[in-house]
Amino acid sequence: MLQRYIHPDKWSAEGNRAKGTTPEAKTINAYLDTIKNSVYEHQQQLIRANKPVNSENMRNKILGVEKRKYILITIFQQHNDEMEALIGKEYAWGTLARFKTAIRHMKDYLAWKYKVSDIDIRDIDHAFLTGYEFYLKSQCHCAHNTVVKQMREFGKIIRICLPRD
Image (cartoon, rainbow, N blue to C red; front, top):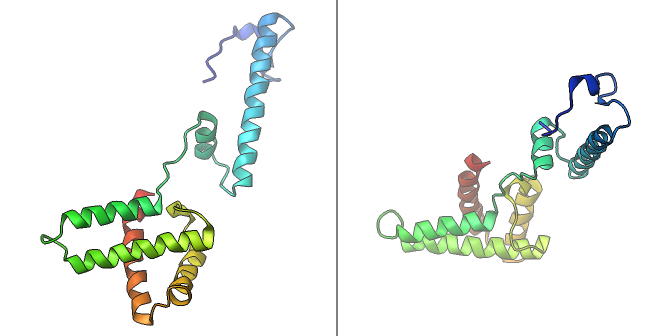
């Protein structure tokens, strides 16, 4: 797994290290120390990010493999582009207009509340949703029915995102 080999006679199973002070043993042991320190550092990164420390997350951290990020505005825009291609076949212009308004409100909300242009869908929680509803009412001055429709449009985007995670 570590791509290193040492003859079994030169290995200490009790210490999990190479025996002796030969240059070969020193090299192997130094490499093991480096790997051990790397594992501890990655573990600390997961803990600081409030992510579970499990074999999959550790393996991905050590190998530098990140979970694919599903970015909300990117997916929202992709949905709107696909919807626009289906105007007259499956969707009406008014439906597309509602979704274009919805993406504009979402972009403005992200800039207003989080000071970002996009957000990973895994970062969307109940507080995000209630904050978005408050934003629509207070900053956009949307009436109740408009807020309900905007939340419904956003709900469709979330349902599109769910199977991807």
